[in-house]
Image (cartoon, rainbow, N blue to C red; front, side, top):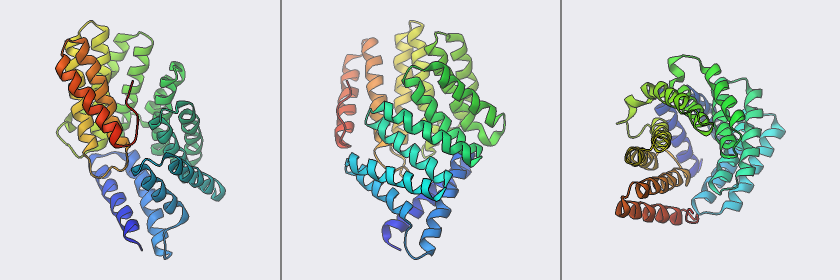
Length: 306
């Protein structure tokens, strides 16, 4: 087995163990599937085609070879579909959706996210379906399809119920539904969902390496910032975005996460923070945030945010 495959297995195992520790059932179950598939390839004497394609896509993303990354993910999806592997088909489409979103190709991201949901349903694995639905719901909301995005959030909440093991999935779905309520102008509903989501994720505020919770906290604070802006509180919005950026920075620092996505998440959050700071009159701090956001985007081969 090559060193790169060993590294891939080690990363998968570390991420799985972290998911188990934090009680993230969806992530743990999917990473277990990924790890077993990789081990099976290793036992066969060489990495399987699916793992080779994922490794090639990751390598291309690291060097901003977006076309090569897209081709590798597309080939992985075609291979999984040919083999009738619904879980791998779901993951390949989800990877494509993330890549398209990174590149601001949101129509294609929405289509790939829809395909991921279709494949996830065929697996009959609730944790995988919740992951697909959250990604799909976020893209629907980006496209202004608030009703469909809200329906995706509602389906996640129905799937996970009140089980403690699914606390993170439930919290993320509540934040998605809160964002939908904000888009509808229903600020009270948005605030209620944020209040309901916070107890599940707040205990992990200082758990810097638990990336799933740090990401959820960043999204929670960004949504709270929008609510503060709507209520005519620019100072509150600016402070909320400072906290959101701190959590996004923790995600970007997580060693178990690969590729440009974590860095782009920080760059986008810093850009939003800068806008909130400007609205509050904090010009110097805003300019520093803009500069950092630009530098991060340039370092991963992406254009400056408008």
